[in-house]
Image 1 (tube, one colour):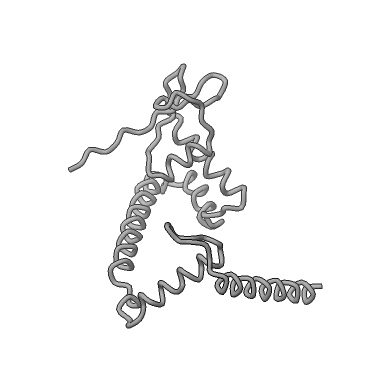
Image 2 (cartoon, rainbow, N blue to C red):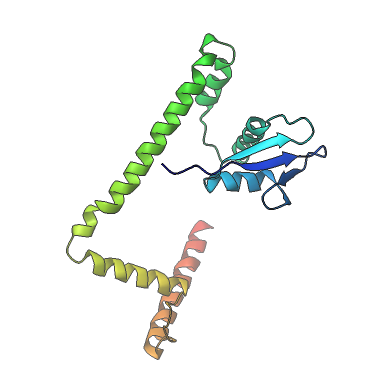
Length: 179
């Protein structure tokens, strides 16, 4: 069984600045959220008292995302959480939430695995050719070139210019319709 990586230690100074002990620099809440999204556990402690402030800062990160319109938690869930602080269910809520998120992570990883290995479209004749055409079309539309490709031939450039003109005409028509 592989050892789990130690949590990233963040120290909070009296000035409320957060200090990353691994990189010896100051970090923001958004930096901490990024570490967590990358799969890293963090531990935030008060430098002077040694108190663990992790929960407080994680709640602050969630609150900031929710206030920016990045809503993940429905109102009824937030309401139930508030209620759980005033009921006998308080002792059961943490275990229930932990088990629910663990089940969610497991089912999510199983779904990703099954979609990668059992894509029914992949078995369809000509699927690979169709996928290659899609990729080439997207690269052409976004102006990307594969490694080692040369400049487009005059015919390809002419086709691309024609597509751009048509797109511009459609955008102009759409703008007139919106008025």
